[in-house]
Length: 462
Image (tube, rainbow, N blue to C red; front, side, top):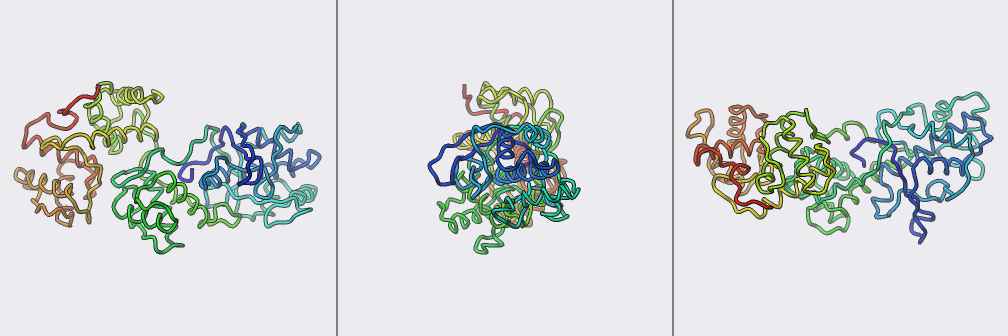
């Protein structure tokens, strides 16, 4: 969840015992949990400002556990425990105090965070009578409220002046942070960028892990090597692939080194949460992200009769939305016409399956699912160089390059020249959009029109 926004979950799963105990887990509405804990931790006779301050703290503590996936990242099937030794009190089935329950209804969307940080504060607290701690004293809030302090002042007294009380925008179902499919070399996504950012921060504490020069969301060979070393350091199978165990171990170690589940946290700043790619694509969107997605879907539409074909324009129009809905119907997804994370992952799976099974053809070469850029070696680079050299015969603005299989400065210059000539983003990298343009021009020059992968499929899957 670390790469996403803070929201109030519809439900929370509570373990009724110590983390490793053989106790039951109960999943209940989040508001019911907040009311239960508040009624178990504080007294209805306390001043209202004291009650409000404590509810802010109780709510924020639970949201921190959920946001950091503190237990789930370690393989536990729950979000929080009911023991004050580890978390906060929860008495399953208890009766509620009406005034506390009403305040919880009002305050459920409000939580505390440090100024300049994003995540809910780990709002440590204790009763202040039997136990003391570095955080809030529950009984101490009573005295402060009786002195006339408002809830925000009470919270500042315990957590410092650099805090804000903010409001979550929505209440919605929580989904696991794991994208639902392994991240492998060649993939380009926000999930890849999340992995890269986490690896680079973890590498500060574990220098054996090589840093990734560009945390840009492109899963390249350097990212794969960093993943392999991380897996070696933390006793995981060294595949260089981010599967579910690796994803959650990364999340847990990242939370630990940044101390996000501690009162004195390093904090998450907004720069760490910015991503290069849209989280959702929908009708009305325009640009390279749309065009890249359209390529994948167009190829799938050429091989699956149930998926409507579409034109690659970069404009998410009604035709694209209809094709998305047909894909979603084929794959048993909600037919929204909107490209969310789940839809994108299934599109990627479908395309990867076609890429694996389709024999290579001279004039309808599929995008190899590898971003080609300076420093990359391999057969895909060699093909790219051959395509550019062929095109250069007919376009004086593009220089031919030797087909060495190494993407060096000359290849980068040739790619940039092509991108300028054909109105593409001039970055010297060959992702799906540039690959489609280069192979399209090459195919038309060498083999005639109508030979692109989504125009001339080898077979149809019915």
